[in-house]
Length: 621
Image (cartoon, rainbow, N blue to C red):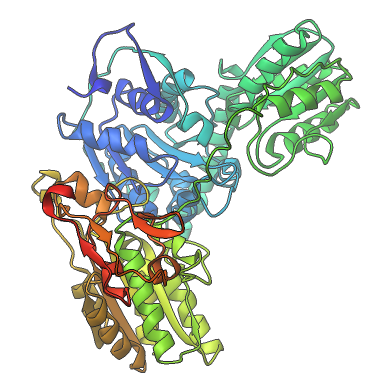
């Protein structure tokens, strides 16, 4: 039985934040869950996917976040408790249905998880999605710790059903990926079948209907404001003349700072957990009792701007600070030391920082920059496209996309010139092709192609853009942890009842006339075929098919062989300088191969000018 299905009420178990959130949804009786995977939210989806295989929970990996929310909206309006999960930039993709779904509302509880990523550990920006709650007019809850995330998830479903509106559940990476002990509660029985009651004048958002629905939304916002004022998720701790207002994980940093500074008698803290609508009366009352206030929030000055406006309305003239060069930045994550220092400086409190532990006698930690894995087929494809373009003396632009293969922009491959969001490689390639006389070769992964690359390809065909699109099909959604996508053979997951969409059939149906299939571990043949695609005038597509090496290993499909460098090696180092597989290392200035890391793709053996790389005998590999 999956550990998150335990019925032992009161039992304490150590959970990752994302596991805690998933458990909260299970305890709330979630019956229907949809997602497009994205770090830092991916483990929520993984656990629910696993649970769905041994329970009556319905779970799906949707094609993209927009589809995910639209599927969830239908389930919630059929009366089912529904969860829709995505990372922060995914909500951009889902914003179209989000805005109108706020008008329509829901019948069963619908919670939308937005996992924000301060510091951009795995993201292209660090946008603050609290503004989506304000923009859409939807309630938003924000947990401050792992254990609270579970309890708050249950409250989010209850709130959604009470207001008959979706509720945004905003987390940040530090909550998603921390671990703590969590108390298990009762699991509410799931209602897995609902019924949709036709009501077109409330569900079909033509202008005449939406005008009335907007009035309903504004009334619901007022109801939500009353809920926020009364909610135990907004609370005050401590007493004293100075005030701190915070949200999310910042509460932990503030609490640590108060303890370290020994100023519990001087500072009181207002934690905002129900953060849209804000509890205006509670905030004004808190401000009235303070000499000055510091607002501690990662990201944008969402709270700060609102609190200052409330102070002005209340005629209060106390000093309120948050974001500034001397206090808190709008960049990156906070940490306990930073928060303690800012609190001490702002309130003129004595601060005696602890003595840092000396590490002078310890060796320097080796750098571990991000890199494509040993045996990654993307590396082979990049090398082959680059070689083909160079041999043809082409002046190339390489728009790329979101996935493992984004790392192809790093030297020595240097195959990535422009990326802004998922699916943008194809569309931006169209623009580059028309705006310049350069050859444009775009890269996109299989999952990203299904997510949002198809429309760009159709655009390219319709407008007859002169581009080559390389679709890197490694049979899985690799970057976020090996989740399925519409092109995956679900038999590899030991699951039946799924379809499988063939990329080449979609490409052909879109009207592409020149389609090339390559196996990137066959270097010479691939280069030859790539050249034909690059010569083609118009839209050409190369589909590079080879399973992700890590995924292949996990499903026992990885070949059991490794390579080594013989004494024929003249130390030209083409293997390192051209492909830089992490299985290579230098030993006394001589190139070697780590037999444990090597997965036997043989790309290096095919590019070695001396043919000095050979497979190890079977018993040694």
